[in-house]
Image (cartoon, rainbow, N blue to C red):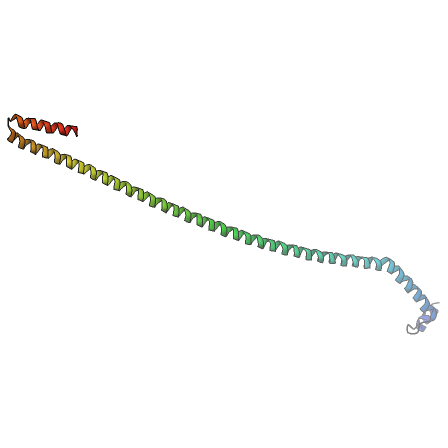
Length: 175
């Protein structure tokens, strides 16, 4: 038997297989291929399809995330532009308000200066009038004193002159 096995191995040629060997090798190969196809290839193909679908879903999600990020960036840029415009508007309003306050303060200061000037002129005029009245009173008193001294010297005891002086004094009191 050993001899038979060895001789069959020696006569075996893979290049020229016999029909029986070729038939059974083909049957075993087809059977192996169909079993492997059902048990291994389908799950492998399903796994590859699932992986392909997951990759495609991930790519779609990444594109969607990229679009959302672009939209958020655009919205952020828009908000920043609005914030800059609001800042500039607030600064302009503050500047205008400051200028208005300064102009109002200048106007009030000008009015106050005019009021003070008018009051000072009125006080000066009143002081001038009071001084003139005082000077007139003093001049009048001095004139009366001088006239009294002159008249005393000239009148002496003459009664007609004394009556005339009394008449003049009465007229002055009435006016």
